[in-house]
Image 1 (tube, rainbow, N blue to C red):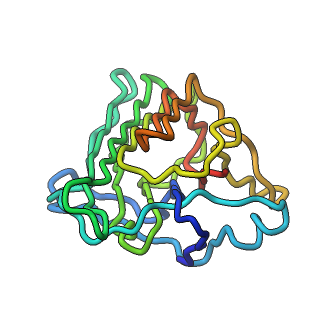
Image 2 (cartoon, one colour; image 1 turned 90 degrees about the horizontal axis):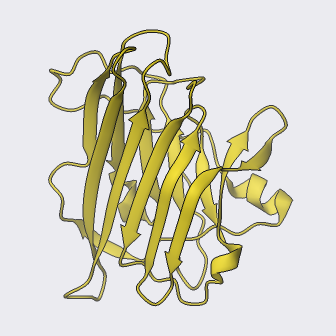
Length: 207
């Protein structure tokens, strides 16, 4: 996956659906597959857009970045994961990311094992949230929450921050719907509340 670099370094977050399924909750670690064929570079350039970027990070401090849950048609399911990363050149401050996905009862036609992972590609400067398996539609929509702290948001205009997803039908982008987006530039925090996920696709933060 190519990383788009901007100065000052900000934040980019991708949410990716994998094609390979997770066979069992008994697996020690889900078989997440990284998508290397898709790149935002040409799409962003075509639309004259700029992605937000992550601060430079040294290492991941969390021991586990993924969650696997059984979805039941009658009960739904809730996935959550957390990652802590150490900033380069900083002894005391970390980047902390909490993410969760709520899938409502009846959103899928059959029981299924769902997985969500904060990918270690973060170390390359991007935030990848990887979902598995490939889901074409949630009805009603799934709800995504992401709370990120310790970011470098200097120079960012809060009014310009957007989160969009890729629409393969026209090679374009669509704005993501959400209940609330909280941005605190001074505290370096972005909090996305109840964002609607109609299907697993590729999502990116813009500035």
